[in-house]
Length: 71
Image 1 (cartoon, helix red, strand yellow):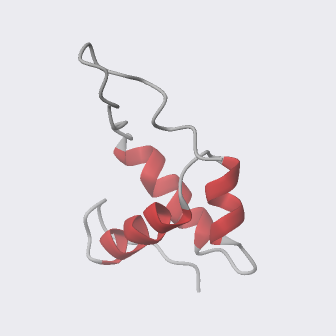
Image 2 (cartoon, helix red, strand yellow; image 1 turned 90 degrees about the vertical axis):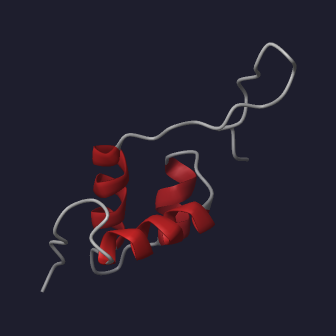
């Protein structure tokens, strides 16, 4: 289960987490390794797999610096 929305603001609304760029880059690069499972990496880091796929698209567009993909 995704536990990222546990924190609430004073008015009772959920607050979205802000993930660091280096954390995003680390997970994305890990997901591009041969044999890696996006779903498993997401589950191990308590994020939604769709979010990791979004970060992968952004990574390839250069949002987190120059991509360094494995050969």
